[in-house]
Length: 130
Image 1 (spheres, helix red, strand yellow):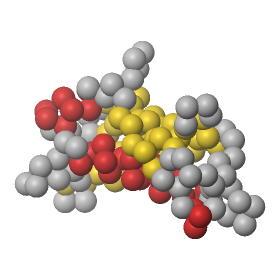
Image 2 (cartoon, rainbow, N blue to C red):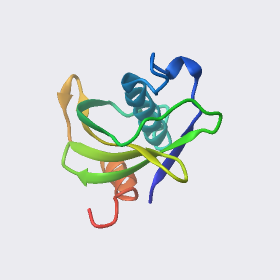
Image 3 (cartoon, rainbow, N blue to C red):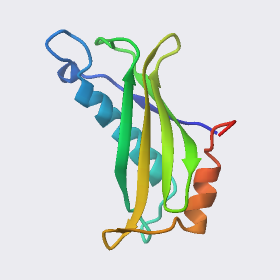
């Protein structure tokens, strides 16, 4: 299963050349990750994760337009205390960015194993062939 999150571009997201600023791409990924994780958490057990690694590959410039873009996310790897998400920022015709984010579950500022509920939720988002 793939998680999809639509984002409306803002003029302030653009750099001096009229392209989406590279830092804003990272913010878009963060918004999509937050949405993905919040769909599973409950008020009593919020996700406690840190981003341990993030790699962004820019595919083509994204310029301002009124139509939103979609961040799609799947789970590329599921470990004991960490998991890697594969992201794409795209529309129906173009791929603007592909990225991976490795997140580590934490408790008291130290890594901790994923719970059974977290693992079950993330398993439902594992990409085919992963």
